[in-house]
Amino acid sequence: MAVTASPEQQRLLLDVQALDTKLLQLAHKRATVEQVKLVQDLEVALGSLDMQLVAARTHLADLSLSQSKAESDVEQVRNRAKRDQERLDSGAVNAVKELESLQHEIVSLSRRQAELEDVELEVMQQVEESQQVLERLTNERTEIETQLGTVRAELTAIMADLDGQKSALDSDRAGLAADVPADLLAFYDKVRADSGGVGAAMLHRGACQGCRIAVDATELQRIRNIDPQVVVRCEECRRILVRTAESGL
Ligand SMILES: [Zn+2]
Image (spheres, rainbow, N blue to C red):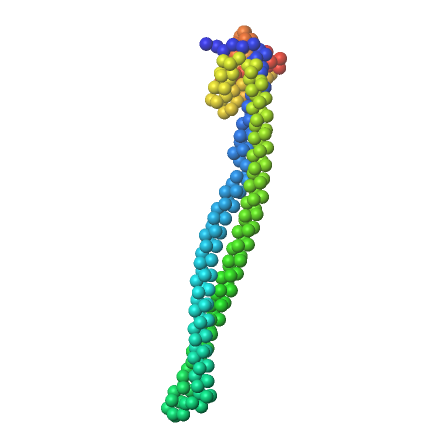
């Protein structure tokens, strides 16, 4: 059964279509806002940095323990050498064998101290390097967090703007749609859903503006004879063909 409506009501579909096209463009814009991807990328980077920071902090804590141990090792050997030296200097030890053994120990303790001080120095260097790594990662994290804050704020503003545009268009469309008979609107919505978002097109100078194909002479003649109240569809694209003064009929 053919859908019927007054020519004015049919022409209203073109205005509804113009708004629906804008709504479609808006939806596309929303789906392709580059800040969405940016926020995701920055969040991934932040997560990766957090893992690196945990590892770096653990490494530094381990090195700090090693450093304490190295310091205490040096301290022990130094104290023992000091005690030996004091004993030697005190003159309390007279036995030759004991003196020799004491001097021998002082020499070997001094060698041992030098070795342990090398270890201590190496650990200190590692601690310093680890602190630098931690500082670099912390700075990177701060930088990314700042970027993330900026991009998130941009995204919020963009989305708010798109939301505003959408609700304005929705309200305009609701106003227009109120004047279109419900069955015509439902028919238009169905055709639009089946035709990539364009449900109604003007017949303009003998061509369908939906598919841009010129209507052939026979079909044009047929359309001329159709009651203006009857809704016509394009033979090619099946969209609603709206007749106006510029249709070339
Ligand atoms: Zn067409």
